[in-house]
Image 1 (cartoon, rainbow, N blue to C red):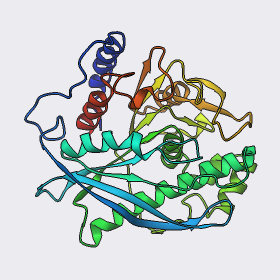
Image 2 (tube, rainbow, N blue to C red; image 1 turned 90 degrees about the horizontal axis):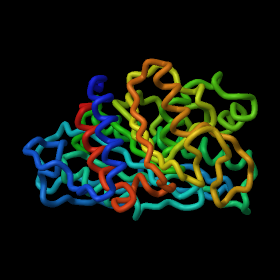
Image 3 (cartoon, rainbow, N blue to C red; image 1 turned 180 degrees about the horizontal axis):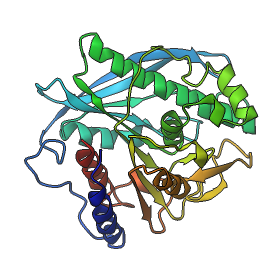
Length: 319
């Protein structure tokens, strides 16, 4: 469990950094694995399948991931981080997520960038199609987490510690991750959303690796939101949220979700509302607002100079 004293100290420290754009972006120089880049190189394995399902248009899709790890690493019980890229449910922005994957691998983590189903029908999306995209992505993320948890019991090919699993999502990927963590009972959903979930294989989805239990140690939410902040209930998983105050796509507060592929006036609860509800539920949660930051700012080393270091510090403190 994350040290709650660290949360408050870290919060003040980080806001200072956000208000001083000229501060260097380098990660800490430290001999401690996981707290800084202690490996020079990383290796990457592409396009491993973790699941399978159909898109909204009925197209069969293999669900895959790219895996990153430190070159020459001998450990077999490494913390695992699942990265879920954004793309507004229209595409997947792998390129935007890969620099973070490389940094985390050089810090000693086992890391995967996962793909998930995006909308492939006639655009713009209706509200039901957008909610379906969220539910499908949620189910795919859960299937990926089950895949890696199951791998520990079948040879531990990826050398991970199943007690130290994290998700980091951006934009639509953060919506997928937040719902995968917090929407865990059908009874939490309204009638329309519950119907979609049921049609998409139930609360755990049907994208693969059924019946495998896993637990998340923490989640990093970058420019994300929930359909309903009341999905957030008491949880052992901690949260770090980073969100720009000038995000015109996913609201920081409660407002309309404005993905380009949808003109649907769908109201969501952004990072600040999710954070407030987490604190109400006694969940260890940190919210960092990037002053004047746009939707991409949390992943940008120019728009948010210290963000990678903040993410690494959060993960390290959560181990």
